[in-house]
Amino acid sequence: MYDLKEINLEGMPVFSPQGLREQGIGIYFTTRYGGVSNGPYDSLNLAFHVGDDLSRVSANRKQVLKKLDLGDRLYDLCQVHSDKAISLNEGNLSFWDNSAPEADALITQVENSALMVMGADCNLIILADKIKKVIAAVHAGWKGTLAKILGKTIQIIINYWNSRPEDCLVFLGPSIRRCCYRVDKNRLAEFTGAYGQGSYYDFDHGQIFMDLADLNKTQALQAGIPLENIVDSGLCTFCDKRFFSYRRAKVTGRQAAIGIIRG
Image 1 (tube, rainbow, N blue to C red):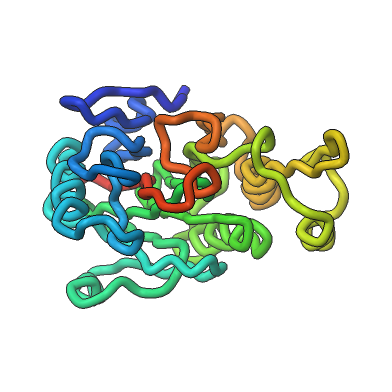
Image 2: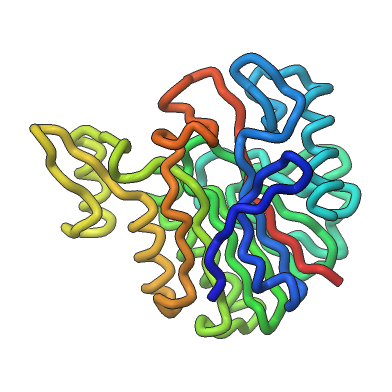
């Protein structure tokens, strides 16, 4: 019902579930195309911290704001691969005027405030309660997935905003997938310690491949989100050259997941 579809906004392709727009919810996953950066950041790099020309990053962000009709700013985070989630509310909006807080999930019910997390292989996830009109943007790399940041964020929304799991939708954007995410035995041991044995990893010719997207789905299911409310893009950032990938090219840009409650 809410499958992610690629749409082209004046040369800027994004993936978005169109069925939610009528309900006042905007969810977007950007690609690497449609911006003004060049070299390894070609072209829609949205991150200031990766070595790109800062004026080009600013121009890219302005294009995203304009073409996605997001208002005049993006609320992002200083992502530190943690399990920390914070709330954006009417009382702390001005905090972002000076610096982005250290965290990896951002939650709000404030209308017309666009939340953004970024990555170049990590899981970028948008969570939305379509009844209470609460939205969260979650960055879950391997450390965040191991720490179960998505499940913890869902519990915050359930406990603080009294959201019902059956009213919540979870969207998993492009990320590195099982086909390309190779880990060693020590890393696997960390995950089996946290999740137990399961079908989220495979052995192939002596190598171990892990499915972080599947583990994030598991967190959502364990939090009570119905399977039919979990929408996965199924796209691999390492395989698909439409996306930035840190494993494919260490010097690279960052794509984003963006969520907004429209007033």
